[in-house]
Length: 202
Picture 1 (cartoon, rainbow, N blue to C red):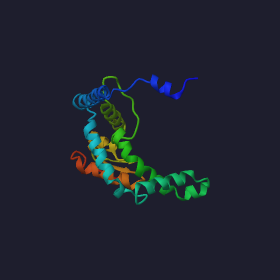
Picture 2 (picture 1 turned 120 degrees about the vertical axis):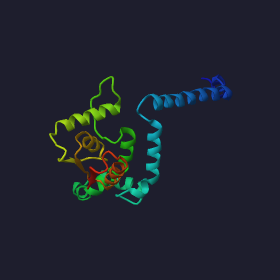
Picture 3 (picture 1 turned 60 degrees about the vertical axis):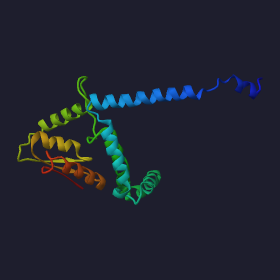
Picture 4 (picture 1 turned 135 degrees about the vertical axis):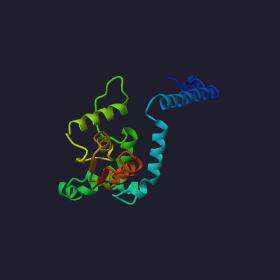
């Protein structure tokens, strides 16, 4: 059996100068890829990351389930681990709010404002597929301009805003979570095409 010193002697030495070149090439490839995606697609990774970081900085002050993210996560995990179903059921509102308070910011960052699945044709982008799906749904609603649509379980209101745009009617979104109501109304207020026709409530 070989000694440890003999084994270490067989390990090739790491050339830090060469390694820094590899790291530079890898970093350049990442930056180039992000730039290409930013310029040639509608994904807008830079804008989405900036929005994500802004939301994370404000997150602690906007929670409805607890005073801090750690307290909210601990409360959620504690209730989820609770073996007594009656205790868990009695704290159901806290459990749901803790989950959505903590998860919504990540849903929006990864999924955009519409928290649902849809089919996608090879020639369309993710966002185009989302809009097409929501516009198809709106087309089947048989709602006129004077109509009023209720979106139950609306998340932060992505689909309801597209339905309001497509049908040019009022849409009210209903969700259980106060954080989602606040975030959804914030997005609605910034969008002049739906600011007067959409509202989220709890």
